[in-house]
Picture 1: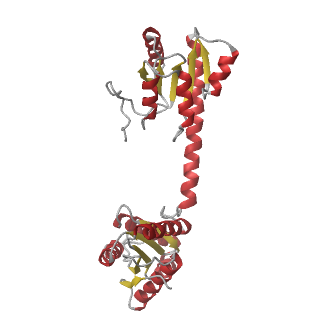
Picture 2: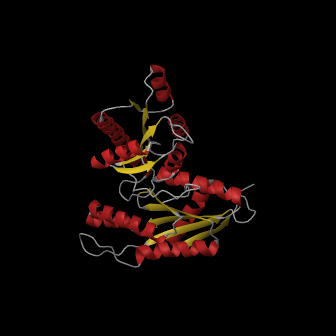
Picture 3: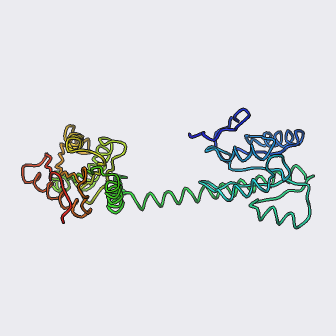
Length: 330
């Protein structure tokens, strides 16, 4: 976890683990701050307490900062209104719920606080149960926001990943290839492309059924993903065909990467409901954009890798064929 935003000119505050049950209190009155802290702890919340607005803002800038904050309006260094403005002006990641505390009870002050970005407003003095109810309401808002965020992430994952193998799907891996090709054009580094295809996969489906075939595809995806570097990309291009993007490699590195992929599939039998099955992989590799050579377009890269794969199939399968160094056509 990145904790680079540390408090200056005072001891760094140690934050509890992030979550919806952690609350930041910023209150300059030590007696009232202690009361707030005691109440919240009694209600099973974890608390980070500071006595001024500057420290509150520094805490909120940290990656694991609380998602709920109770801020006094009048504080030294930076008042609660300014902290609210900064929170709303620098929204990153998850939403923060802010309750503003003040002795001001004029309607114009209430409007000013809400306009600054506060979600709720309590006028001192207030009943402790009123504070508890406002905190509960804020937690419900944050829980709803979390649920919506998780739903969005799930939908985004489904849109970009193959449902069987959980690899990048055809559209997503093609976009990755386009981005990596653009990056290679900018930095002058080479880009490797590998097209891989399971050998005689139709025979597996015909002999043992599609459930066995699906299990083989799923395991193949896992083996390929485990065999590449952390910054390589693996996608299911279609059927039993896979596309692997290998940025920043030379010809020797690409050959070594392709060989790891071939061995990952072919060196160990696949467990299945019909017993162990031996499966092999044919691969076509191409490298482009090395040195000052212009990067070809992505369709040319795919055609070259596919042609190399076709040659690997024609020469007996379970092998790697390279298209060599591909350059852009004038």
